[in-house]
Length: 132
Ligand SMILES: [Zn+2]
Ligand SMILES: [Zn+2]
Image (tube, rainbow, N blue to C red; front, side, top):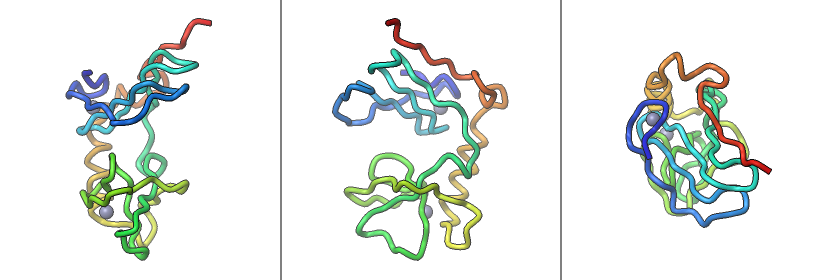
């Protein structure tokens, strides 16, 4: 699948289909995601979010507790640390906190810059609702 935001190829997450989504596709360049299938949407494309509202803090056994890393994609932080079983927490990753990882912030800033202005507006990404 081609990314509707930046045009790069997206990759499919190795997840088990659920009632809410059958496939999840992510762009490694701008990190846009597209959800395919499910109860409510045929295609669901989450809108652009600014850096401080976009990432969740990564949790894994091997990660030090005193540095806050952002959860990027499967098993990986935004700055590239890989730990098996890594998951996003229920908390935002807040870049302005003193313990926020600088490399994660650099990556988040670069990713933010890959979103064209026209793709940041509300309704710029189009979801397809399922007909009932
Ligand atoms: Zn993209
Ligand atoms: Zn980091």
